[in-house]
Amino acid sequence: MAYSDKLLDHYNNPKNVGTLDKSKNNVGTGLVGAPECGDVMRLQIEVDENGVIADAKFKTFGCGSAIASSSLATEWLKGKSIEDAIKIDNMVLVEELNLPPVKIHCSVLAEDAIKAAVNDYRKKNGLEEIQFEESV
Ligand code: FES
Ligand code: FES
Image (tube, rainbow, N blue to C red):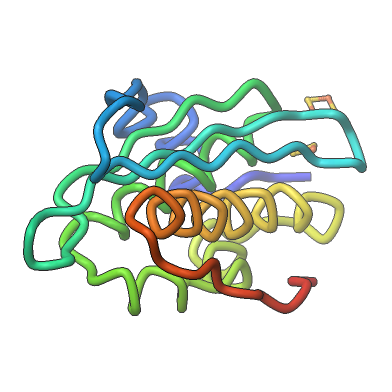
């Protein structure tokens, strides 16, 4: 099985690895695990006063495809509104990284981490959590 150059690049040089200050009210943290394999991903967003994601960071304890998915996701998140952020679908990550079928759940992890981070941000700011449908 051959991995795409884009995937290998995000795996070898992951963008936005790190931690944002959880104690800040404008930081949302999503921590999700993949039941398929036990890999774990933490993704954080920092939202500015205009509701735009100014920064995004991740830490993934997992496979290369999960690391690449979260690296790409954080790149895409920066500069997006919350509304647009939750439109990031795992299948666009799959397409962009050319993930093989057995690695699709790794991209789902990234989508779920984004949603969890958004809901954490909303909860911290007195907003109702969004009920998302299960991603495939
Ligand atoms: Fe082996 Fe995810 S199951 S790295
Ligand atoms: Fe499970 Fe990639 S193998 S997240």
